Image 1: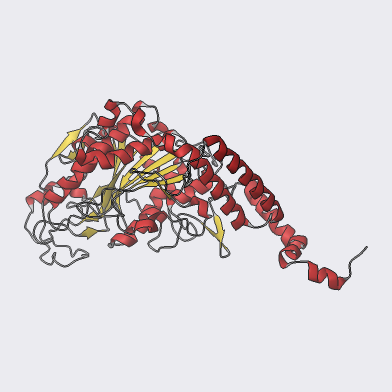
Image 2: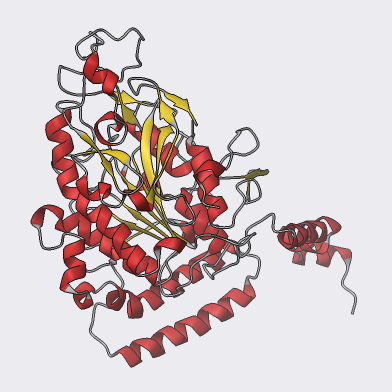
Amino acid sequence: MQRSTDNLATTLSRRDLLRLSGLGLGSLALVHLLNQEKLLAAGATDIAARPPYAAPRARAVIMLVQNGGPSQMDLFDPKPDLKKQEGQVYGTRVEMFQKGSEANKLLATPFKFHRRGRCGMELSEVIPHIGSVADDFCLVRSMVSEHNNHTEALVLLNTGKIFPGRPALGSWISYALGTENQNLPAYIVLRDPEGYNTSGTLLWQNAWLPAMYRGTEVSTQGTPILNLRPAAAISESLQRDKLDLLARLNEEHRRHYPQESELEARIRNYELAARMQLAAGKLLDLSGETEETQKLYGLDNPTTAGYGLRLLMARRLVENGVRFVQVFPPVKPQFQPWDAHSNVKTENEAICAKTDLPSAGLIKDLKRRGLLDETIVLWSGEFGRLPVSQNGQGRDHNRNAFSLIVAGGGFKSGHVHGTTDEVGYKAAEGRVTVPDLHATILHQLGLDHERLTFRHHGSDETLTDARVSDAQVVREVLAS
């Protein structure tokens, strides 16, 4: 029997009306066409592995965030003119973050530089282990940031803009590509169990991407992932039966609300958590690693053991299909350990003693296992340091130049890109912005930074804000 117009009006929801209207069908058709053209990442509410736009050189990323601002002229960028002119007033007025550099006097590095590897890359004596793998990474000496404050610069490094509220690099990559291991999140964060570095969880937010693309913290002490285990001990088979029943109930509930994307995401998150109950503990158990491998990461030394354990876990995660792993440095003696305001010699020696050997160990281990070619290892801080002294022995923040290293994933090895001026204050040749870096990493994963979009508040958002930025893939750092 045909319903009256009044009855129809009271039984149709606004969602149903739009769905049945031409506007609703047109929107569905547009989304379908965009997906067909690969202008949107598919599967915005799941973590299933998805193919990239083009043939990738890499399938995973390990991002080693060096919070505090590693000093380029003390680690990676030798400046003989600093030694010659030490104590002289620098003729250029520098941007200062803190008081104490008013004299503008140049400060030479206390460290010697040596040529390392077959490539002859000049590196500081304070990073001998990183120097031992110089032939396996690309050194970029001409990075620039946009801010001299830690939080803004870290947010930029992780999201492409200095303002909070945008998705992190790992969120974009996991949104686009999913994960090859359905028992673990696509994006995992490994921090020091004793605390957070600068800005804490702000650096691995999903923002307006679906919640499942937020970084998931995994601990290297105690229970790897909190709240996964049932309070009461039950057998694995009984737990499996309970989870299967829950999955059937979720599926039935999902069929009643097919248009509710938030419900879909919430159900999938619970399903992932259920799978993690059964898989995470075994995967993160490092007892099966050989003594030689553990020593490679410095697990036999209390100074390097904490950071080394996180890097070893990172290797195991990408080895088992996790797409993006983000590792943070130690929080002691301070929570931004590369921030050498007081004494560039003692402060750099302290943090290098903890991170140098494990960083090199990760690259060596990935290479010997055949994983380096398909894994990008990024070692970077948020900015660099000034060539002038702060309080006589330290250095202040410098957004105008910093160095980073990137290994594997189709990047050139044993290669130095870009230069800074004679004292290391500003990038001079081959300038690389953070959006350029992000565009290049996406490119190596088979993604186009202009085509990877997410509709938000009526705009097609991108990682690099491609509508207004001039981000470019830095092809000079890529292997042929």
